[in-house]
Image: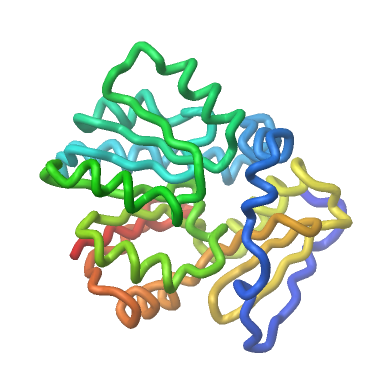
Length: 248
């Protein structure tokens, strides 16, 4: 539990997603390792991740995707079990050191591939190379979608590709927000952490580079409806999270 009450600031309608993206943070090896280290996870985050794996395993058994593209794969934490649920797995991450580690760890599996670069820059070529695949899903696990800035443009561009989109997101419940605070407190000095409540959801910022929002499900539904050709379902898969599965 935090040493002092959690202070949440109100943005009064101002957008929390108008500032700089997280590219600098995640491209720095030490920063990315710290936030992906299981020892940094709070109990709420551990439960979220355990439930996420159960949910995605069941989902991908049913949907039978030919190719799963995981955004933010880091050092390949999910590559083994995700690759067992499809014919081809492709992991994308902006961190060069993490991608090298992932390639070394999974070099013996011909069905696993890793690509380094921002998803906005590399996804088109990856999808072009996999057009022969019958069904493709792009996966944003571990609330990763909440780390992007221009999400309206991202959703719109993905909906034009023909690939399905799966996003697991933290919800905005108070217990989840507190669990996120304890998690980020293990990664950053508490004095650097700011928490904001806004129309879009609950935003955390730390220092000059890190920001992550847990989207309000209704806000994300409207954004998807207004900016894309996607339709789909929202499934609460955990006490602390929801899964969006979107198809064209």
